[in-house]
Figure 1 (cartoon, rainbow, N blue to C red):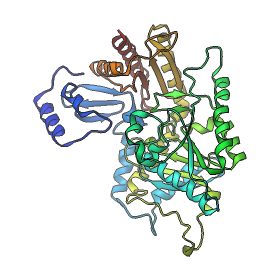
Figure 2 (figure 1 turned 90 degrees about the vertical axis):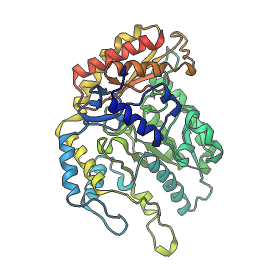
Figure 3 (figure 1 turned 120 degrees about the horizontal axis):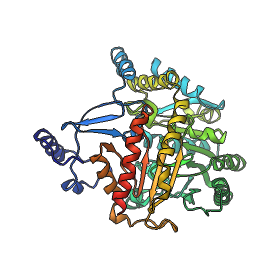
Length: 454
């Protein structure tokens, strides 16, 4: 972290703290931890008003795919602004939305035929829950009102999305406001028996899900989960076999499978979408975050004709899905998303990411010998290192010691933005990062771990 602020930065911070309430922040922390006003960004770098630069090693909360101020995306946004800034999507349409929907469906399995637009990740989850529930209601299954999700899961901050989440830090305070959810133990491989493979452990853990489905299927709308990586849940990961087994169980017991691809979609896990690695088709797919390359708020729900047709009826039947947002399918956001998809094609992104992810893992591999590193795990361009108090027993540090905060401060002093999740330092960069920039980040992570664990 910078040792001191210039007068202009001090003035900006003072103005901010007088009026802005920041997200996911205990504001009292800023009595000791200075805010960092950012002046501009280019590529993987952010620059503050004091001239300090930071590699955005977490893609600004996992949204930025092709770097800050990307010239191609900037050009496409400018072109769209000069044509149409916004129009309602009820009774009207526009080409950026149509094109984006066509492209997302083309990237999806054959059964996925329809795209419903929403505003952000949390609203996508809420809409998906309503869609699943309403589908069963329209088909006469009035007892199906519940959802099944995993321990350690995170699906958003609205009351609906928080209801199907399971991290006390975010949920416990508001529990009395929420819908009851059936919670099943996560297949997370971090605490598995060392003699057990990730695949075998995941298969064993699926038995808990299967028993829950067998018991509750008659009153369950859907199982909702984050494919392969529980991102806000400390980047815990599991084997793709879980999704394959879950798809089979959902088919057998007549419930929906909702894939929350908000954080893991658009190449983060090595494939365009994480569920692809299990060779399955979810009934409902929620997308956001990287959908616009980190520029605009937008989300979509992809689904099947089977679900769509359950709402297709005479108006007087009152079966329509009446869910909307004022800025649904904003043309500028859709044009930005199309530009991001262009870059996937132009840059051969998924193949290039395989090279980068391998290099990242190799660069961090010597941390296996660190006495306070309990795990190094990776799915594609998501890499996480978990700090522990006891390596053998994987006993965590006391959360009140805020070891992750120490690592964060170390990173800033060395020109790298890392924002650990508890005791987990993760590396989820924009896809345009270069190897020399990876070296800076991985060396800083190693130094941060030494500093935070001593």
